[in-house]
Image (tube, rainbow, N blue to C red; front, side, top):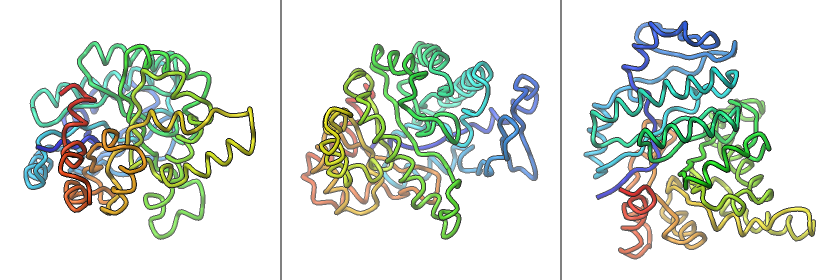
Length: 325
């Protein structure tokens, strides 16, 4: 058995319903052309197209069977989280998406949904978090930038979000955003190859230095993309902490609270990650359905030098324990 803890899903039925509900969201536009859907938020540019495999389950279920994956834990798509919206509208958008995620997944026993949160507002995030937990969601996927492009996880406005996550023991998967604001990443497809790694590393480093993960220990934070550069760069963060005594929290303490997915692509890198963080802290992930993801996610585990017991932990038992499956 294997459980994929990092995947994405936007139900086709939700987009079809949105055609008739778009007036409920004055700051959202849906552009539909020849079977393709894009969303635009708060007057911004349209998203990239919502690919068919992101909307449907037939290819997903075939792929899962081919790869020996029994369950897939799927969030929405970061480009469609709507964190650029005004807070009230953003909360309603999150509720709308969550309603459709749980409805669609109720008809497919192989998919477990992660809820959206309006992270542009800590107050609204806390409210939607509690509602989603009451509705049966097992966790949440949020962007590393909390306002679409911009915003940090350590923003004091997000204290209610962190307090609620701590109080409820919520699982929070942090996912890098698609940010091409640095002109250097606009060539060679570096937005996915490099910019997301930078985004994730920066977001996580900030909450290590602020002490969020030692203050809100009840929150269970998953650092997707294998923690980006953080496991490799931790020594540099420790040096920065020691070079500025008394200014920051010790990053080692927060780092020990994190979970990580296995999306590192190479068995030797997975070996390093497990040695760094412990086998009990690593979860199988794919980033389905995106080409930048690991679309043979079990192979990196099988080809690693981990013991059979630790391979089983990464493939299955860690996810079972964390998500209560």
